[in-house]
Length: 566
Ligand SMILES: *[C@@H]1O[C@H](CO)[C@@H](O)[C@H](O)[C@H]1NC(C)=O
Ligand SMILES: *[C@@H]1O[C@H](CO)[C@@H](O)[C@H](O)[C@H]1NC(C)=O
Ligand SMILES: *[C@@H]1O[C@H](CO)[C@@H](O)[C@H](O)[C@H]1NC(C)=O
Ligand SMILES: *[C@@H]1O[C@H](CO)[C@@H](O)[C@H](O)[C@H]1NC(C)=O
Ligand SMILES: *[C@@H]1O[C@H](CO)[C@@H](O)[C@H](O)[C@H]1NC(C)=O
Ligand SMILES: *[C@@H]1O[C@H](CO)[C@@H](O)[C@H](O)[C@H]1NC(C)=O
Ligand SMILES: *[C@@H]1O[C@H](CO)[C@@H](O)[C@H](O)[C@H]1NC(C)=O
Image 1 (cartoon, rainbow, N blue to C red):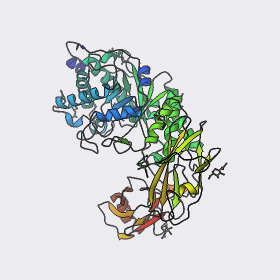
Image 2 (image 1 turned 60 degrees about the horizontal axis):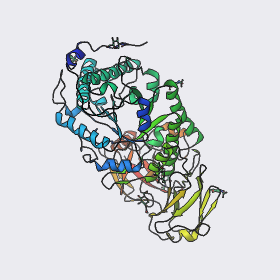
Image 3 (image 1 turned 45 degrees about the vertical axis):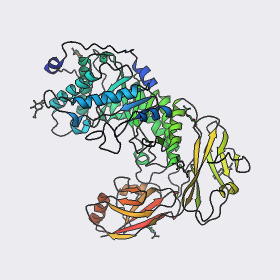
Image 4 (image 1 turned 180 degrees about the vertical axis):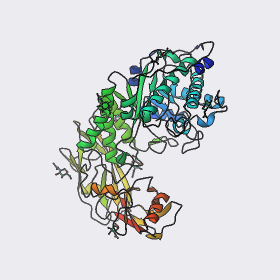
């Protein structure tokens, strides 16, 4: 049942008496043309959306050169998340936004569009700061009034921007019920009313409307098309961070790419497309971050996600919080291969990929993005399987030269054997542990791949036990000896009880009793960190608990134990 909405006096009170006249150029586009042209896109994450303001999180203030880097990498658009909550200078009923902040946002929009990019400007963390319609005791009248006034002011400031600029009403609005969804459908309409009232080019501007959480299932279930009196071309934006365990490094899930993994992702995209057969769709955020995911799993996931989105006529915009992909200060990509996989897959070009374990019941895992050599052992030939996907291998380069086929490596079907004679030029049994060199594989089409030669040994902790002390994270010195991050952390109480998530007993042997990144553990280049919350759980359990810090490769014995006593 469609619900009507009415702004009543609110809109009449604020509606501008005289329509804004723009001298700039605006060439109207359809929503589907806009969405097709912005693919693939990139998010300027943790920047203008930082709370309270730009520069408060991990990123310094925006510089235009960042967008040159984005353009050079092959992206076509920038989503611009903006948090407005701390930039109001007035309260009810006018909710005046600081003119300096509006100007800053307008200037960043200009930096983006000056490079020919499409952009989507939004209202970001306001969704949980003051605009959460699901919060207990939420004053919906106040949220509607403030939301209208905010978008009226954004709409006025950006009214004369070109057709390259689209608006998104609100980021990931919280909510779980049909009532929350009905209120959000109303907010979508209030947003449209506000920007139309602000006039200028806004009545023809593309908008990307949202459902609860920008979640595909909630959007499919409850989203209502906007009031047909609005003339804006509209698309639907949703976000995709699934499966949670792989994307967020939970419960030891360090592999991705089984038939069932792929079928789940495809079913998710097919469902929302099936609900909105004639609406342009975009995935405004997604990411498999190099911070939290294993390399081959990440590359296979990124390729499959972009390919499948393309199959369902859906554009993708990569989330980048500033620590994930682009190192803005050095203008380098932390995972250039992932970026090349995304841009090629978006063009419909088949990428060759490394292969890796897909069987969740396996007791050890391998990954063809690495040639792992164990310190103290002799150097032998190493065979790695690849997924050529119809391409042929054209060349392999080390940092200094082109390698010789048949002498340095042998190709057998989709396996590449790296000869001991080649590997011995980089590593010996006594080479210091860590990444040693990169080999670049070029194929007849698609992204080039990097295989990193890693000398590895078991990580060593600076201490192995302490008494649990409540109230703070515990940072334990560690010497990583290979890939400098944990693969997983298991937590077992002295009697064998799982400290967390006892249901993980139903998972495979490399996932049982494993805990979750950020919730229970974290790390840096020289520490493994047990979070205060995990320490508290140990104290609450009353039992000494051993944390098993597992490293890559995930093979027997590649771990270090730390015991927290009570
Ligand atoms: C759409 O907006 C018009 C103009 O404000 C209003 O008269 C009409 O009732 C609205 N329709 C619905 C379904 O909300
Ligand atoms: C809710 O917000 C409206 C508009 O700002 C205000 O008039 C009203 O007093 C608020 N209600 C409560 C219960 O605070
Ligand atoms: C619409 O979405 C719902 C929820 O994801 C799903 O169950 C349903 O199958 C979808 N409908 C179509 C036609 O795909
Ligand atoms: C390819 O490599 C895998 C893993 O090392 C091995 O099991 C398989 O037998 C190899 N296949 C061929 C054709 O050499
Ligand atoms: C390998 O390449 C990555 C970037 O893809 C880089 O960060 C790393 O330093 C390189 N490693 C070596 C040993 O050259
Ligand atoms: C595809 O991959 C190649 C090789 O890594 C890269 O040079 C190119 O920029 C990528 N993107 C496109 C769209 O071709
Ligand atoms: C490390 O801890 C695990 C789990 O408690 C235990 O099974 C294993 O034997 C321990 N390893 C060593 C070397 O103590």
